[in-house]
Image 1 (cartoon, rainbow, N blue to C red):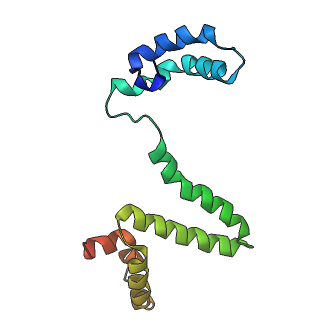
Image 2: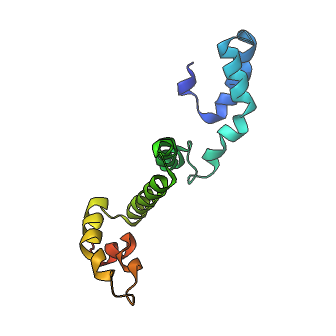
Image 3: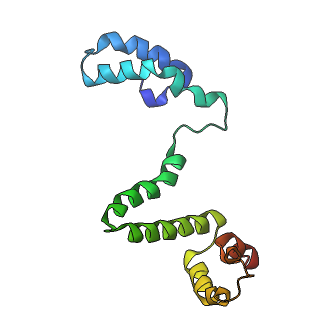
Amino acid sequence: MQVAQLRPIYLEKWLLKEYPNVLPKGRIGKAIRYTYNIYNKLTRYHLDGRWKMDNNLAENEIRPIAVGRKNWLFCKNHDAAESAAIVYSLLGCCKSSGVNFREWLVYFLENVHHYDNDYSKDLAELLPHNFASKNPG
């Protein structure tokens, strides 16, 4: 019987049955012991269908931050790092609002000078979430 064919109910029994047949300090022995020790955590997802078996979604969301953090080391000075942080923040706002960054940036650059001398206007009107509501689709 192969492990892949086992249902979660029988996996624990299989782990207990096979552990005495392998070397405890060998790779398989360590893998079986590790799996058995976290078995309750490993099988929690089957109690509620909304839970995911992995955390890929969370990891994919934080990956750009980790990559950016590595790239920010090469900004050379504080002002450049601050400018990069602003661009990354605006890019993140576009992503969370479902806005194409390039389209928004063109719109922003075409309209930002209308706000130069008129201090009654609010620059927040040009932010990505407002662009999304003005330009659906």
